[in-house]
Image (cartoon, rainbow, N blue to C red):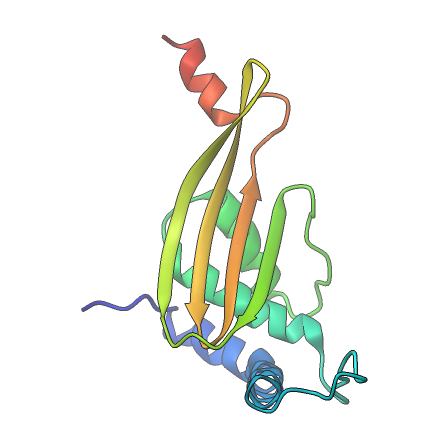
Length: 156
């Protein structure tokens, strides 16, 4: 079975830049899932870790499983490979995550969900990563003025 992967240079860079924070956060979440916090504790803090490094490591996996020419993915790749960049356009990209004890693994490249709004369609490209202890969804929001599906229908 083939596995998705980054080129060796990108893999080495992202692993060196972001891997330690990703591993630390993953370990803390694993321990928390296995040993639940007392009910009077409503959160945990992790010192000397950079959450953006964790997010960029997750985004690097999304770039890897969506390894085809697409300017929307290229934006994510450029964001991940620029160590100093800190912002991503939240109107076009959304990352959702929750913790899971499931040992299922799933790497699903982009697919499209269509949502009907009155007489128009809204398209959202979705990609998914599931690997113990996380389940992550990446959503790429299409141009709100004229979604890609409407462009196709215009030609009919």
